[in-house]
Image (cartoon, rainbow, N blue to C red):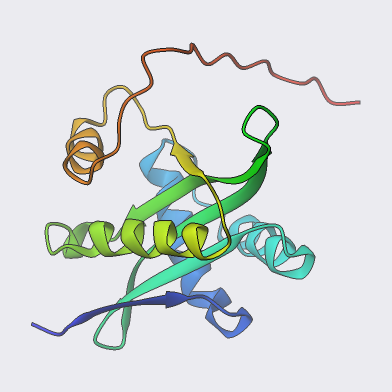
Length: 152
């Protein structure tokens, strides 16, 4: 078994990331659209809108996580939203997700963030167990609401 390594992704990782990102979206029931996945990630790179970390097993890309910067007005501090976390199904249960999460939290800490938040599907019990085992706490204080914004 090759060692798992995680590092911050750069633009030259775009092709490998897009394949993983497309698989991630399919995991959540979206149709495959590699072109759109590539364009979406490229826009994040070009505008500095996220920090992406990629995991490799040997030379093979096997997972990624994406952090979006934000701020907490109440805390008067920087926070991050861990919006995406995905590990290729053939590489799961090898500690890849744990390494990606640790790297993301370390990155947030290095920039003075006071919190990293995430959400996952209520049916994704494997992810919930992972987060809880890593010390994450489920929010019991706030409800989260969403509204779909109609196109203009």
